[in-house]
Amino acid sequence: MADQSKTATQKLSESAPSSRQTVKFLTAATIGAVLLVLSGLTLTGTVVSLVIATPVLVLFSPILVPAGIVIFLATTGFLFSGGFGVAALSALSWIYNYVAGKNPPGSEKLDYARMRLANKAREVKERAKDYGQALGGSKTEGGEGNLAAGILQGCSQLMGTVENCAYLQDQNNKRIG
Image (cartoon, helix red, strand yellow):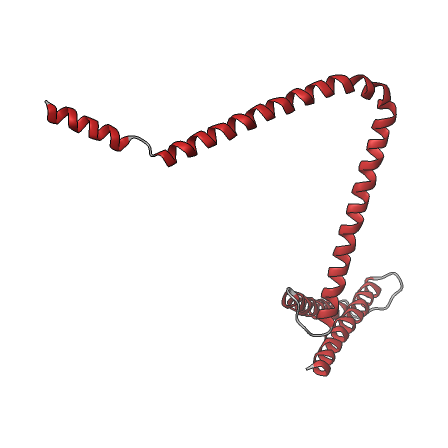
């Protein structure tokens, strides 16, 4: 029986926290209690100040509410204008880097889209030419021949613009490279 009580006593002394752990716990509990009291005092002070300030806010609300709205709108206006300014500067920077041949992010997609646009314009031009030939190329006023001729002329102008853009980009890349 003595062995069992001795073993129980040893177990109790081994499972007891050390003095360091006890000090840590007491310090944490004290700090937690102080912070809890301070948060309660802050809540009480907030409620009391709100009770005192409510009549003042009600009396001055015809002035404060429009002033708050004006301040809000002015702030959002400045934020939006600043955001649009940053967006414009980044867009201009991207365009400058693209024109300078530095290949900014996304320039490959733009080049691919330009090539597809040029190919579609050529295709539309050929279809318009075929359509004009199928109509017999009649140039009667108000007839379908004028429509086909107008489409053909518009496609030719578009093709010229797209090809000029591609040519100018190639010349710029050669000049830089």
